[in-house]
Length: 196
Image 1 (cartoon, helix red, strand yellow):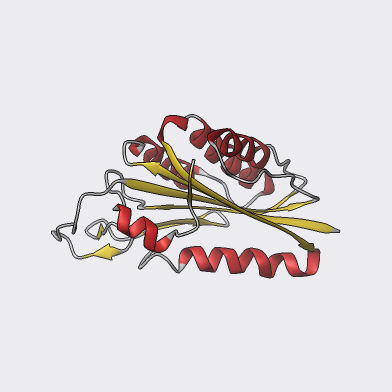
Image 2 (cartoon, rainbow, N blue to C red; image 1 turned 30 degrees about the horizontal axis):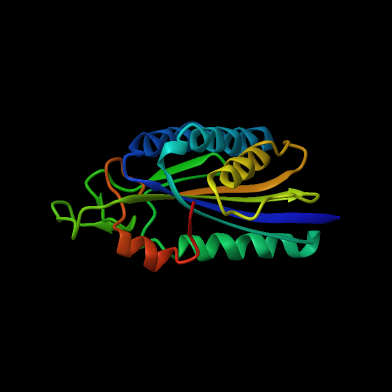
């Protein structure tokens, strides 16, 4: 059967710091060991993004349809490509196993760990949230050119049923509340993002 694999990224203005709190809460409390739990993660994440449209600055959507046998590899390639942009991961919830970096560690502006007491290089301007999904059937997602397209994509991705959802991964950088990416960092790591 056909499987759709999609990656939606939203670059938000740094004032969307409440979104970092929401995403941390979702990651810390989610039961990712069940399909219902994964669906709830997807719905809560898309709702959190939908509730902050005034902060949307950039977005990008990549979607492909493949056969079931190739879907896992396609999803994993997207996930590895996105995770490789971080120098470290500070919060993870996989199969209901929650892990966090040591409390004394501090994030730098690209989501990596730095020694406590380090000073960020420059003030940040952006937060980037990435939603990766694999779903049975075809996802008719729009080409992202405006805020309306971002809204439509979030609604369609958030509406994937637990019976159709095969995998979901939510990534955001920086993870630590109050920290943001500089414009140069965002352009360097997320060159595909388009102004919306």
